[in-house]
Image 1: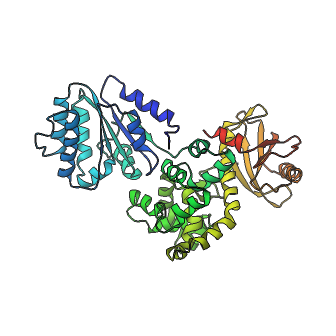
Image 2: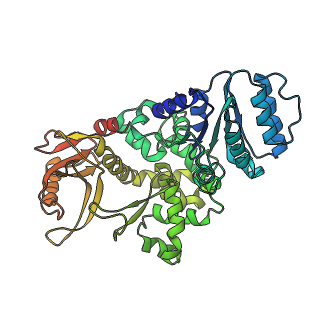
Length: 455
């Protein structure tokens, strides 16, 4: 798959590496998001890229020395007893400035915990060193601790800290050469993780990709959550359990605690960890304050993880027996409902980047509660304009068998009974899979519109 997007990250890296002094750059993010590819994209032929692995410290020092020797002949001649001696000799030997990139840096730290202190010494005492240093890793918690933790030797010393996130949904059409409508469906399974998209592109169609890569017990992505948890957590039982419950539809704290037979107070830390790592989000209705919101839902953020815990977690026994066709029937049966939920997410996410009726809006939320008629009501999209004078109220539907006139009437009825209008002008919008023949005075947004804004 071709190198897609990452323009901001590339420009930031290139600017840092072109400075007139040596820089320390830290890059981190979950596995398979393209960190290594990004680094290789900006390195020059004279630069050095080293992929660390789970080997003894002495072996890795020698392997890095051998790699440097290819660019700096004779460098591997001496025996380096420690990391500092290697870095010092690199500084003394180089004639021209270069960049040394160390990928999967946490592997080195696990073998020698004093390495961050060595790099601190290098940065503080060798300000004229002749090489930039890029430290990259997939263990998000460890990388954050190394550079963001106030007790870390490297705290405050990084010139750039770049957290690599999955691609935005608007790039899926480019990655898979598909329509925006198909891109919504593909994104609901693979998300924006470049490696997942690369694997998907090698499969013949949507069904075969899901079956071969995910459902099949020998599929490349069949055990993906376990691999991700291994990067970031000492134990995976609790996060696995929380995501299984949330993926199954229990999204309130009380529901999660009840399903796990644990006091709700015991879940604060693991929930915060999953939120910080980007696996969970805390959702509140429009108009609520995050600090004291009483209505809170915990939802899986990443589409692939949401798909895995929705469809694989409850069917692992059947999949272990090789019953992939049976499980696929269940997936196919519920797929439209599942994609509809992702269409809602994408629609809300696109709102701040849209201009509707010449008006710009802020972050969009769902809303649920009691309306002015004292009846329970839910709204898919609610957003306030930047000047606080207007309110966008929207409905999202993915099925093509929708009566647009009926949807319009229902949406306007909901808008009239919404208790938080407070004198603001109301603009209604429908987010639909297909544009209807007539739309009255309501904005209609389809995949072409939404995905264009998510780039």
